[in-house]
Length: 122
Length: 122
Length: 122
Length: 122
Image (spheres, one colour):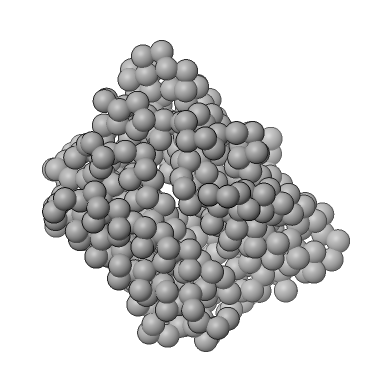
């Protein structure tokens, strides 16, 4: 996942954030399907949308950072919020399910990383 | 482009915003390639990223609205900003090029529509 | 949705196919949520994946065509198959539901358009 | 990147392929911007489209696999082809550039992994 296109943003913290975003995207995408198989509240439009929103917005943030775009701080702010919401939902709905717990953890790591990127002075 | 999944958001204004977002996504994607062929400032990382950011964020906003997700207002706010930036860039860099003028117009229409969605009380 | 970047593919048929792909993407995305609200077979992993696959692959095909890329014929072939599968699923599972019938029709239109693009000599 | 939704596809080989696809997506996305800064042949529509196609198709394949969808073999076949094309282009155009060499290697790893998935009997 190389990235050295000389826009002053190719540092270790942004690389870490890109990895967290892609990991969170992947985890939420797989968890949404897992939740469909569980049914009930897990398969509600609300919970499914929270997971899919989080996946999509994580992917968009990763993409913006990978291209070294000026919009990364704004993208990461929205991403942090989507991740916080998804972490809470996975914990509330999860009821001890291991995959949802894992998803909540990926969301929290991504939220923390995105909050750091989102608070950079641009 | 049907959408009647009873979340109170399937109205004409949101449908219009989805259409503007998808049109802006398509126009920015085609314009980025057009700008590559023009070369010079049109093919700079800065201008290319502005166009691709706008395309991606428009697509993400459309997706969030199509699913009736609660995050639509935030997604539309970021989208409006990406569209405003892209419209300005296309006008500044464009120098009378017809396709870039068309792109600037699609961006402005989308920005206006997204601003209305982004200011809804959620 | 302008597109004149001189790769010999900017003709009316490709423009029509791009529109069908984006319309099918939008319809399948909204229909997946609609199906979640209906529950039962509509909310099964199988049916949800068919709708989401179709949406994603339609979007990817539109993107490839919008950029005038050489891969359009292959992308459209896979897209036509995803659309045919989704049309059949919506008709089988639909049971007279108006939105699923609309989705099946969007899928068939897109499949026909993609089949024409996929059979072009590249 | 958890994935245990019981469709018989959550094995180590598919997990590895998902990782290769996401890594290739990220590498190609960053390399496209790097190539824009290099200019010349690197910034041509042809080379940029090859990189962006590869990125998009890798992302789509990862998504299809993450959801355990039946379409994974077809998605992986197209992906392998996009990766092979991109690897060749990066080697031809690259001229010893380290980032393009890294991109070619990510593409080859992904192509090999996708070829294995694409040849599974479905």
